[in-house]
Structures are given as structure tokens and as C-alpha cells.
Image (cartoon, rainbow, N blue to C red; front, side, top):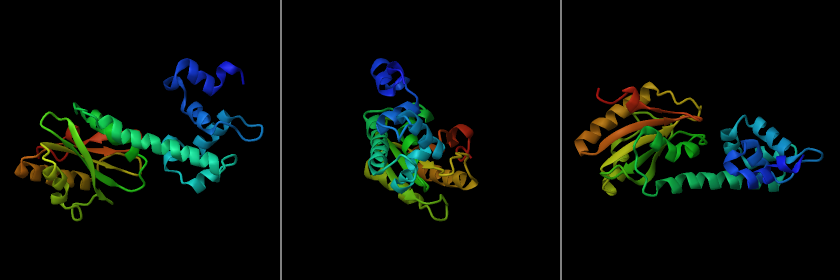
Length: 222
């Protein structure tokens, strides 16, 4: 491969943002397998797991099951995924103010799109809609018969939050709200009015997409 087309050299000259996902993964892998280049190996790895989200959910044994990926390369991939996950959780929260559903989704979309179970989280906000903290409050399929509304507000009361945003994921990748999602939203909005804590939105995270129930008028103002 000509030097100016190699991923590492391209990153040096044009920056990481200009590189494709295949090229970035090739840099992490460093070397290929046999006569296969690192770029070709990266293409096979991504193809095997369908996309970047699939790669993020892959276990070490699944990674090692791909020809050319040994324990060292599997560990490097998992370390890179975990660094990205931690960065997505911590960095954006610093004094961030929520102006739109996209702002809120951006805090959690990367990490939550990789989860294999449904997680329900609350983004706690102050009176200026600045993020105070994010807490995981429930794991499992969203069901109004199981989810205790009081538990959702406990972190908000403990940290004196003025408002909150509900966020949960659909492991299927389809963020379309279910009737149960709407029912839970309706109950939480009602409880928020009684507690004087604004429920600003409920976001459903899918694979590369999200849905705002507030924008769709589902569970709000009903």
C-alpha cells in the first residue's frame, strides 16, 4: 500500500476525524494476518459484527473466533471500546446545558446502544438545565407494573434536581416507543408534577437513532 494511503500516515496528515471506521480499527490492530493487510483485517472484523455497535458488544471469545484476531488484538479492541464508552459518559457532562433532545441523547447514545439489556437512566438537571449527574435506576424490560415511579425520583430528590430526563435503550436497535414506554412516561410525568420536578422528556435509544416521546407527544400533556 502506498505510504500516503496507509491509515497511520493518513491520520498524521489529515487527522483522525477524516479517517473511515475501517482505517481507525486498522490502526488499533496495527498488523494484518499473513498476506492480509491490517485494513483488510479491519474490514473483515467489522463485517463479521455487522457494524461498530456490534463490535462494541462482542466478547473476547467472539473476537478471537475471527481468523487473524488473537488474544492481544482482542484485548486492544476491547480496551479501545471501553475508553470510548468512558469518555462518552464523563466528558460531555462537564457543565453541559441541555437545549434539545439531541443534546441529551448525545450524552448516552453511544454507550447505551451497545447494551444487551434495557437500562433506564435519569439525567438530573439544575434550574438552568445544566447536567448535574446521570444515574442508572433500572435494568430490565420497561414495565409499569414493575418499575416503581418513586424510585425514579429518588436520585432527583437526593441531589436537589429541578428537572430530569428519562432515557432507556432498546437492545433490538429499533427506538420506536412501545405502548408500555408511553404508559410509564405518562405515570412519571404525573408524579413529577406532584413533586414539583419537571420531567422534560423521555428518550428511547436505538442503534444510531433515538426517539423523543416529548416531540411525538406521547405521554406528555395527556
